[in-house]
Amino acid sequence: MKKPDLFNFDVIVERRDTASMKWDKYGGRDVIPLWVADMDFLSPPAVIDALDKRVKHGIFGYTMPPDELYEIVLSMLKEEYGWKAEKEWIVWLPGLVTGLNVACRAVGEDGDDVITAVPVYPPFLTAPANSRRNLIKTHLLETDGKWGFDFESIEKAITPRTRLFLLCNPHNPVGRVYDMDELTCLASICAKYGIIISSDEIHCGLVLDDSKRHIPTATLSPEMSDRTITLMAPSKTFNTPGLGCSFAVISEKNLRKRFTNAMTGIVPRVNTLGYTAAVAAYRDSHEWRRALIAYLRKNRDLVIGAVNRMTGLSAGEVEATYLAWIDIRNSGIDDPVKFFEDAGVGLFDGKEFGTPGFVRLNFGCPRSLLAKALKRMATAVNSTSKRHPTPLV
Ligand SMILES: Cc1ncc(COP(=O)(O)O)c(C=O)c1O
Image 1 (spheres, rainbow, N blue to C red):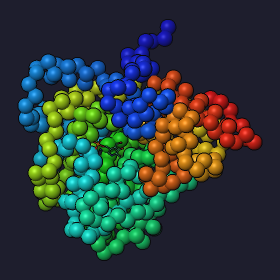
Image 2 (spheres, helix red, strand yellow; image 1 turned 120 degrees about the vertical axis):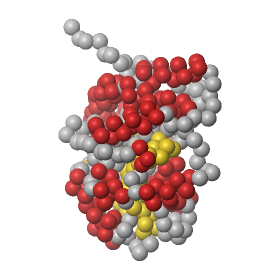
Image 3 (cartoon, protein in one colour; image 1 turned 30 degrees about the vertical axis):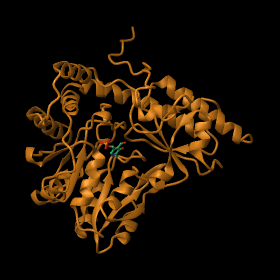
Image 4 (cartoon, rainbow, N blue to C red; image 1 turned 90 degrees about the horizontal axis):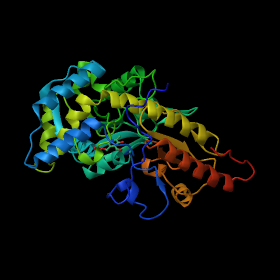
């Protein structure tokens, strides 16, 4: 007899008219939204119960980070990554994008350079200018659907004023989990030129590939720890991005001071429900996360299989995240967002990530919805490429 699933990710929850950025973007249009990165799954039961209890208390005054949450985060870092971090290294933030922007302000001076590798999550491309820094864009290299750093071009692009590298690992949108050799090589280049690394690790709880493990950049060595600002959050893994609770881990005292100084008077406290959800997510939702990963793996396989059967489209490996990065350069489609929206599917344009010719698809949704979206995409692609019909999924 088949064991009943403990958590049912197949359930479709109506999200329209909840002021959902993802769903309400399309108003009354019949567009399946697979663009912004939140999932259409209920958060873990433990998170919902904890929030319910906290709401019923009924007073929502100024809140401190709960002591218990420090312990939970420190033990998560130790158990998952063998990282012995200390309580005072943790700086709470109401969002990870806030952390990226604060990192740009905290490191170097006005007019300095900040380097990153595209395609990358769009706020990486705007954060430097927000802080009066210049952005230096290098390009990841793709070989057979697998993306990686072009270390030579990174080293060539570094200027005497380059102070900060904005790293995304696991990498949104290309789904890579960088291995020890890749991180060591990047770290040694940064150390050679005195560059601090801001390491956005928000997707670290979503490694789908069994043979990979997430390595926080700061765990490479004590020296690397001291030149790294690690940014993490429970929000992607446990589907709580609307609750705004993230944190930075910064071991080096002066760097931490510069970071907290840059926040002063501008960055608000984390809200009380954000903390409540974070405790229940990290402490009580391990089984839910395991079930989520198993579900996402099957969704990933469905997406990769279907997309690679569409004429002119291809998608590579997704080692982590619930995001597929789809190459449309051989499809003849000029305006991919409009093309797929007209077909009833909302995707994110690669040009926002610094790389036109691609779209990003979020597969964190019930499988029936995903299959419907893929069928719509295949039908639309078919109608534009009659000479090479695409099998429907
Ligand atoms: C790499 C990365 N960093 C940061 C964020 C957003 O973080 P926050 O909502 O906490 O600002 C996202 C959301 O998709 C992301 O993919």
